[in-house]
Length: 297
Image (cartoon, rainbow, N blue to C red; front, top):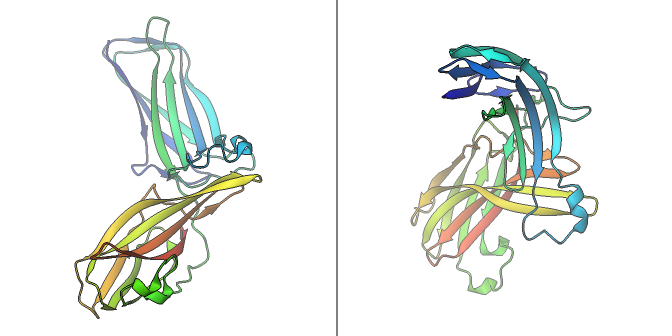
């Protein structure tokens, strides 16, 4: 007997804010009449923290703070035990999206060591001989936009052999001068990161210029913490030995799910940085790092 269970939310983009109601329908399709022991719906919001392999064993006190943090959890019975007729049955539902106690609903974010996820799960219990059915559906939570206007403060940069850090032999470096600016480092998450870059001079031919977006995730507690930086995306903005004195636009869209407004809590932090990476022909890498503050406006 073929039976299917589906959760359909009313909003196509599946984006909700705290205090709103999740509305939608459960769709049950069956070729024959279907006996069941009840249908329930549960809503969960969890922050999963994971330690990187290099940190495991360093802080024994860590296990305490790495337990998942539950932001929201509620459950309701939608249909009492009974029978569904053959064909398609739609059951409307409505769920309030309210945090537990004094918790706050953080924005949905899929990272490497920090994961903030909200799911709706439907379970249909059936008799011993038939297999129980379940369906899970993820939805997104966005935090409320901040009321104040975002201040755009341009950041100028100038990259020369003298400005570089972590250099062993500065004398062996080729001579170069790369100037430019970012229009802002406090960025609205829904708008692109913009700016421009100019190669004024370079003794060695340039192979490539790239923009690298990095997430910096910190998990921890009073006893210590682990901070890990991982790449989200890398965009090439110029290839080959670019004309000197030519303005190259910087433009990067922040990907949904993999970025969220900059977040700092007692157990974890999610921050973002952008690297401008210049690859020289001899495969030398020149990197300039800019911390970013992402906000929702």
